[in-house]
Length: 501
Image 1 (tube, helix red, strand yellow):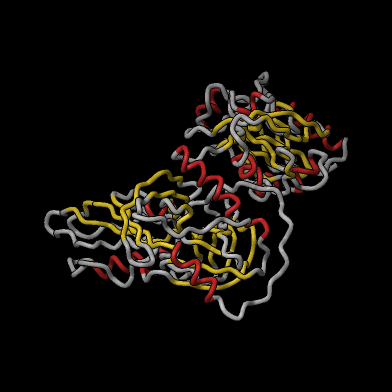
Image 2 (tube, rainbow, N blue to C red):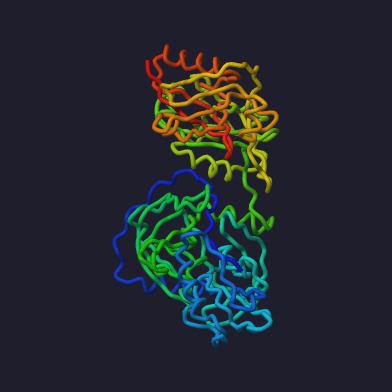
């Protein structure tokens, strides 16, 4: 069973009016007493065959706070020591073996994961993180009164890191309700309740430390940060506001030690509740899809396009026959707003698109050719294998090469020799970068020999003369930068290069 902190899609909701600030309560006891019965422990197990030498090491993302923890744990248990039963190190994703494998023939053993969850429906609907139950053969939910119930998985999603479980109780269960995470403010008091290190219902208090945190776990990061103590085992547990409403689902921590240092992260309820509804009804998350590859609009790129400010998302690839392609969105367009929401940051676009209903027709504001324009796009459901594709236009080759000393590079037309040397596609069009000056501008911007310049200033180029012509036009227009569309080994990207008179 693997463990990971996946980024989760954010469903942007309309901005809510901030609630009035509350002073610190004399005690959290009354609030905690009413909430604890709805918070559960979630344990899952998976049968795995270890090697003859040692138990399996769970797989964690590089730099995960659990990586070193489990490395040390497994080292302590190598050699067939007594591993039977639970141990005090079990926590969130603590997959320590509860039966040591036979050191001679690698008999099957069980990996166990412990986490948290909470009940949102008295009939037995339980919410947790996907990484708590990922790959499980068996899932068990333990209530506050120590009642244990077998759970079935209704739906899960690794990108959102959410899972919905169903238990069948003999009587209605205590449940909690979602609140409006958009109304929570930095500095508001919050309670975290969960199952740290397998200890059972534990309450910690803190404040909302930050909003909209990107912790580099995926393109949809938009976490609530809190200093309420969250440890291994809290994953999947609720983060409450002072009205007793769930405003977040505790998902990840940043820590050099594996323990809480006051950097905990929760999925906002505003995003989670829509995904949870989809998981309950469809068994999977249905993400909106536009079919573009994007990159950040830097000041240099903005200047080269005549765009004031660096808002928006620059289109660097369009999927053939995808929603964007069908709406005639082009490579080099800057998407300024989607469905009425301004894109102050590039990373906002995937979240806004993902929360858009499938088949909805929405307005998209673009910057193209120095002007704003609005088109309509019909959002599709993201396919599992969705990949952006290149969008270069063919050009007419020429035989001459060119030394652009001011930019620190030499270029040449695509030829059979260069195709073979740089392993270019047979259909590759553009102008090949053949040399890069070690300390030149092109080197500073990451260009390499073998890169292919496909467009300059959003116009296709087929010869070095075409490139020189576009540079001259940019200088004549008093541009400080010129924008290149470059095809490299890692795909298309936009590269701004400064130009001088």
